[in-house]
Amino acid sequence: FFRFQGHTHTHTHNDFNLFFSLSRLFDSSKAKMKRKCWSRVKCASLWEVAMIMMMVYGTASAATNRPTLSITVRDGHFDNENYLNYFCPTLSSTYTKTLHKPLSADLQYGFLLAPSSTKPSCSIWCKVTKQIHKWKITTGAALASIPPQKQQGVFSNVKADIDLRVEHDQRDVSARLFASDLSISRLECTKGFDLQNTNRFIVNPRYNPQTHHADVIFGYVTTATKVKVRASAQCQEVSIAQQINTRNVIIPTIASNGDVTLRWERQLIPQRPVFGGQKEENASYIATTLKPSDSIHVEWKDGPWNAIVNIPIDGTDVHSGSNVSIRREVTF
Image (tube, rainbow, N blue to C red; front, side, top):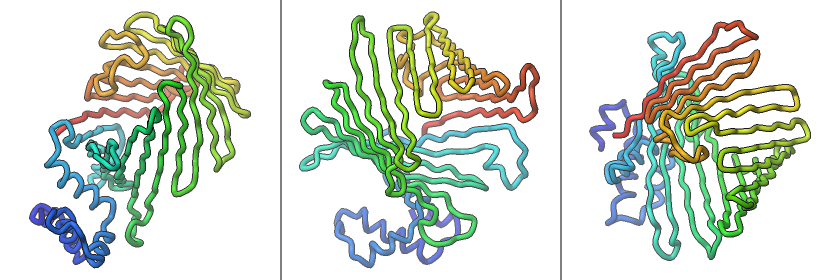
């Protein structure tokens, strides 16, 4: 553990105090730590905590919980010192654990590392799910850090997010609360109604206390059609997804301000039903989105491979500034 860290970079005195303290923290024979030891743990940045989570928990987890490395190669002009901006590596992992009495809940936690020469980011998160009678309560928290150009102190530029969700499957109702930096950023609730022939109607009102913006989403889903209406005081928008066959879906969207969008999704592997048929990690499709006088967006996903092309247009003319990125996910 020390040898790995020692070869990575030159440590300061606080770094070794941190690693020594955490080694005592995970020592079962010394479960109770002294205040002096815990004060040293606070010296850590989120980058160090995430790396320690990867090394300590990653080696003890099953193969399905091993870290996933995602490398994106995108178009652009970067000098030799900014190679991370060209390859855009991202390392992430998710771990699960069942907590026994007295809590009796399911625990998920993980990390995400995105090194960059201009905007490096790091986040650690956890989620606890507990069933109380017929209500499913899920509480999630995340800490994200973007280190500043100049060191201004420990945990500088840290953002904290909280996600609280309450669901009742039999009543088909749920409520959700989002908070960022100890301030509520969004409130929403969802109510579903089952209709005849497996059809479904959904109502989803939302409100942002910070901006005082409110809107409501109405959804109607059938076997081959999905209608979505989003209405607010400023703008109204309707989107209709129609399944043509087992491979093709057409999704036109019209807004009250005159914006029109046409999306065409073609599944590389036939699936039914079209809505929610495949898991995201196993999905294989080509999706083309046309915004007249704005852009053409093409996404090609084939399992762990993902290619994205964005071309700005003005009428029938193609402008310069096209963006191309190719991403590949690798599980260790």
